[in-house]
Length: 115
Image 1 (cartoon, rainbow, N blue to C red):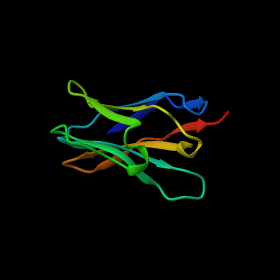
Image 2 (cartoon, rainbow, N blue to C red; image 1 turned 90 degrees about the vertical axis):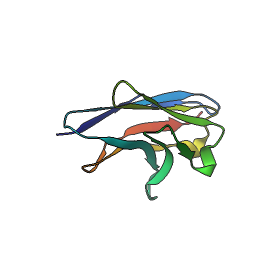
Image 3 (spheres, rainbow, N blue to C red; image 1 turned 30 degrees about the vertical axis):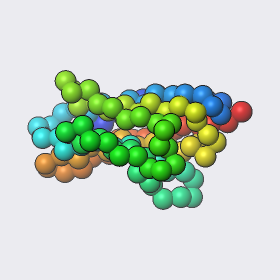
Image 4 (cartoon, rainbow, N blue to C red; image 1 turned 135 degrees about the vertical axis):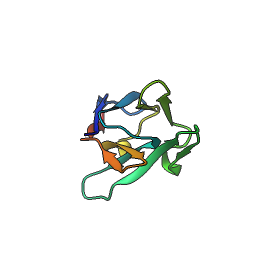
């Protein structure tokens, strides 16, 4: 059974930084890629950033130049470095793992940007 565990969320002031982590464990699979999504209250869940197994990355326009996604090639872990945070970045952030078997979601971690 594949499990994703996220960490790193919290409360930060506008202009601050946070680093989210997501580690996958269990199961046997070939990883295609990992991604971060976010969902604000009353809104749909949107893609923030993705990274494929070959290192290709893609970002939502709203976070380009401020966020950076990376992965640990030795284990199935993905990170999201978030800089210059804005109040509109406030949301629950979810990690997603896509494999040759299925896609899996983490439980989410709250990020709140407020003074």
